[in-house]
Length: 545
Image (cartoon, rainbow, N blue to C red; front, side, top):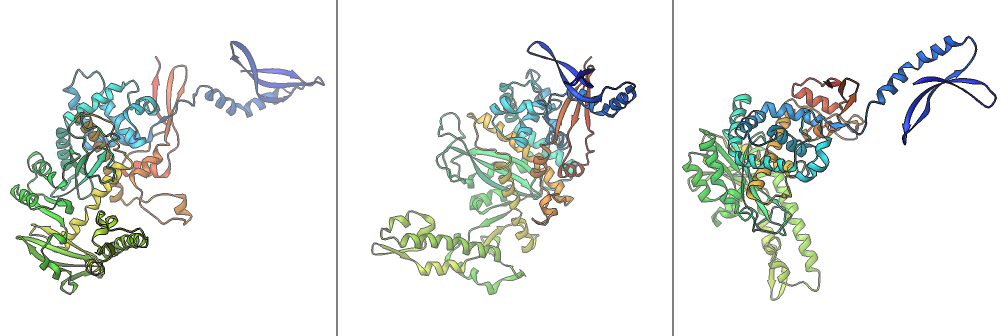
């Protein structure tokens, strides 16, 4: 930059701050600042003008050395680095890397990148390689990793899945005093965008909880503690009946995790005499949901609310026995309202179909929700009023069977209600972390992919637990303006906000300086919740020598 004198059409001279630059191989000039009219004896004023604009000049000089194309996502990665270290993931992966010396890539950074992708933008491995890895803060990830190395990482994760789970389980018990005498178990289905069943033994057509019978799927069984922290998972062929998935999980709890006492809490889909017998044989205990329709007809007396003991005005229970085990039947107003609403929606659809002159019996007997409310009068379908009345009597009732002897009925009911943590886990896995659709073909890659998703959810669940323990509230403009009610800060919300925390490399002749952008209020809260210091404006300085 230099000062240049220019004259206008009347001959008056002016001072300008000018810089030279190249364009299409030619040297050109452009005016940066006008410094005022040239007058004799006014050099002091010129100096003052330069002083006045010196800060702007310095900013321009710095701006020339910043390429705004290179702004990297850093916020979630800084959190993830801390959590992976705290949970022991970093330690076990480093141990595994030492046993795979010929990998040819950094196993920990590659896994870190895969998990970070689940948090920031859960895309396929191909899209991560092509579009996203170059947007991550390169100090924490390996931008030079190759696509086939992502897949190789999945292979290592699949091979050591049980070992990883066992290490993290024991690490959590030692570090966080994690209680696992009560564990929650449930199942879901995960689909593929494929109909092929010939390349592995896991992808199969089966009953889909997503109602996607046009796709193959696998069945995922997940075990968590009562605070939603995932402990382990099992993958089953997509056509597996959910009642037959229990054995592997129970074996893992008793043999691999060496838990002396565990109370197994599961939804009614896991209820079967064989399952309960197997748990007892393994010295385990259970709290399992039970459809009252499975009981014999003499159980109609169970719907007599006069026999029930009231816990609150909206919850009552009645305890009896079933084949030597405790059977606790509950009535809850919330469940009664839900049962009534569900039935009314079904009846509304039936009435609409019956109003058509083309209504036939076949339209109803082939649809299970409709069938029990329909009678066939000759060839004409009509509403079964008696069946409707009988169903109304059952609104709000639910059975729980257990062999736990040292808990009160209220405690048993409370333990069963904790199953919402599993439902929440499946919601996060399928929602924010987008575990499906799965794009892998072989058993090994499928298990590797699910292991990465399991670890991503473990890290997120750890954040969720910390936020809940400290009762951290969401900071929001809409809350401040009383547009929405106060609510808790969730891990996905904080992570999403932190994705806007970027780092920019500033180049000087001798150094590269990594400068971060501002951190939003919820991101600040997450750092503090983890006991982390707010990152300094200058994250890192690297010498070019």
